[in-house]
Image (cartoon, rainbow, N blue to C red):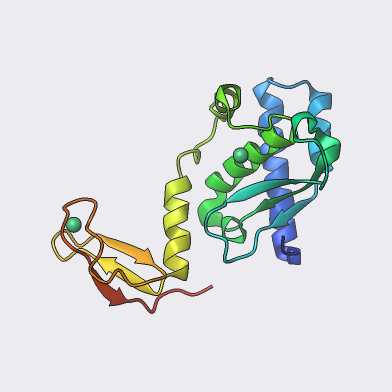
Amino acid sequence: MAKPSSSQASSLEDLRIEVLLTMNKMEVWPQNELSNLHLVQLGVLRRNATQRHGVTRFKRGRNSETLHFEDVETVDLHPQLLTEEWFNYARFVLYHEFLHVLGMRFHNTAFRRVESLWPHQGATDGKMFTQHLRRLSADWLWTCTTCETQYPRKKRSNGKYKCRTCSTVLVDIEYVGETI
Ligand SMILES: [Zn+2]
Ligand SMILES: [Zn+2]
């Protein structure tokens, strides 16, 4: 985990308030069960993380079968989520992590059912966010010369990959785009 800057810390607190307001209205949990969520330490993932958008970290040495709020070390969100553009997805990710904090450890059917009750938009933005992160860190755009789809990547494709849409062999175009 990286230490959040002061502006990241205040964005995280804003998100926490938003998510808790919504969770209170959902009437799934008794109010006192949610009060712990005010105390969870919020942080940010390293900025070059691309696989994870959020994570709930538990303290070392705890038995994973019986994890509770007391065992939570921190909830970290990707720093790129803390922008207005990704606000809807960010609060969904924080909601998802809060379900882990509340003791729903695994992504099982029960977890997915409660997760799906989230009443705002954003739940389906994960793929777009992954694409966004890839583009931010890309050095190459694997480009389809037929349908013009571009796949931002760290490495060259060297003629080994085909377009998912039309199966044309992709060509490498060097990408000097946005940097973070
Ligand atoms: Zn999860
Ligand atoms: Zn194509």
